[in-house]
Amino acid sequence: MVEDSKMSGFYKLSRKERVKMLMKVTGLGEDDLGPLIDPGKVDLEILDHMIENVVGAMTLPLGIATNFKIDGKDYVIPMALEEPSVVAAASNAARMARNLGGFTATDTGPLMIAQIQVVEVPTPYAAKNRVIEAKDELLRLANEQDPILVRFGGGARDLRVRIIDTSAGVMLITELIIDTRDAMGANAVNTMAEALAPRIEKLTDGRVILRILSNLAEYRLVRARATFDKEMLGGDDVVNDIIAAWAFAEADPYRCATHNKGIMNGIDAVVIATGNDFRAIEAGAHSYAAVDGYKSLTKYEKDIDGNLVGSIEIPMAVGLVGGATKVHPVARACVKILGVKTALELGHVIASVGLAQNLAALRALASEGIQKGHMALHARNVAATAGARGEQVDIIAKRLVEERNVKVERAKEILDEVSK
Ligand code: MEV
Image 1: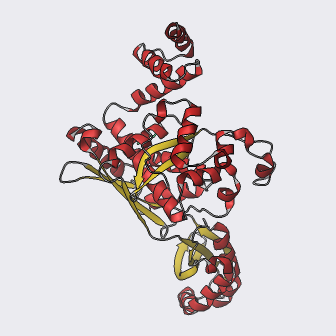
Image 2 (image 1 turned 180 degrees about the vertical axis):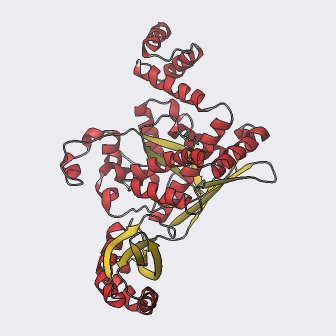
Image 3 (image 1 turned 30 degrees about the vertical axis):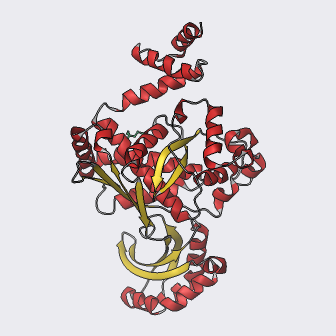
């Protein structure tokens, strides 16, 4: 368990020094982190079996977000993505929530929905009743498909039937609600749906076409909230402007798409780092946001002390067992860094990062704009590319920004000067 995720000065260290600090803070060693700190160690044999026609690998930078306290516990958070500023922004937002208790999260449990589409049903309303009457038998049949899941406390829990009118006629949609425990659950859910299809056809006198999970995982939600310090945010006006920025997103889908994209910057980065299916998470997030007209996945309010209270509610179909999470050595290392014991705990972490990411973006947008921060970080990258190390990075980055000339050539010239 991480005692203190603040890891002060982490961003100023060289990559090697960061690795050392990460090892110290997490208690993990080379054995655990090998392929993460040296991507050349990832066994291509493993990747070759993950998808088809493999010829190589695409490596992404893996950064660590600091300062997170979630449900009273400190976490250092691995984030894999190509976009600068995201890791720094999440860490900064977590810092502003830390003194006021950090993030608090709850969940609805890991319940997925499997859909069975029945067409050509002669009497849809009577068929609906017949399927509901057979609920116990159908749940039993579903659970027989996955005794291991059942042994771990999961399995089919409930069933609902909807009649929908489509351009291809009336359809009867049977939906199984399945507790997938620590698995993302796609395989378990799809297997159950396929197994039930013949019985559903008999019960409805119809014809089953699709048998597949829904990514609109409305029973697999995580809710997280945090209070962000008014002074750290920049005072009353900034708090008010952040609320206005959020209200803009709530009222306007053009803005809301970008607002929610900012949330997903953080969420996807942790989902990818842990080898989870980011397309499933994206689909779940945006479809959930659109259920009642496309809205923000976050909400903001001001508390009686003037601090900003943010909350997020988002489907979170992530797993810890099975899939790339168990197979990919870097994903395994990331799970160790997080120290999460259940998929739900991982979901709490991911939703909290999404909220932090959104707050950071809104704060930048509502005050100085995002380009200033981007340029400062970009300047650090440019300084490092020019060969600057340790303290030199900050000195050179500052000069580059002041001169409004963030170029490697100029960074090299300043480096020569500074080195003398
Ligand atoms: C950029 O990747 C994300 C932002 O555009 C999010 C937002 O506008 O809220 C900064």
